[in-house]
Image (cartoon, rainbow, N blue to C red; front, side, top):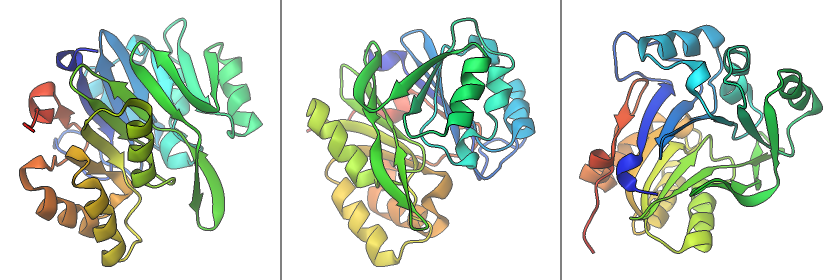
Length: 252
């Protein structure tokens, strides 16, 4: 995949990068790559997602694939906004651990459902990590993340990183061995102690060129990432567009 074909637009996040867009607790990002449009998660609230998509002139019927990272409502709550106005032939990729009710909703909408268990190529150079084991409030949860295999390296897109962002990056390195150009998404560090966040940053620093934390990463963790990564840190929020020029390529 040509890195210059990639564009990432944050549609749902706790903060906003544009004043005419609505923030909300949750995450959604539109991936445009090689002429395809892939929506990763939907955020929690239908009205917020629809408002932001309308303002950004993004239509549900333009989306080729919906990629849902895990079953929590702040990531799939606005699912109906896409299914009710979907493109013919829409593919919806979900972890096998999703409950029957969600699977049934997707099937009833007549979208094509893709059940994910392990790593696989979903579209050319667009991969899922497969279900990675995680935990939230003592409850086990499986989560998938997206990997874009470009001619310059890997772009990692996480939903909430319940399986830990370290393990997601490890999986990307295991599968491809390439440099990680960018890791973007929720890193689930908002309830972690400073020492734990610093351990995560120490792990990621030599492996990831640029970092763009969102959603559940937490304000204090964001500040620590920014302090460590400096010009390699990308500030996000609803409306933020990450282009190939901003991802950039570092020497070495």
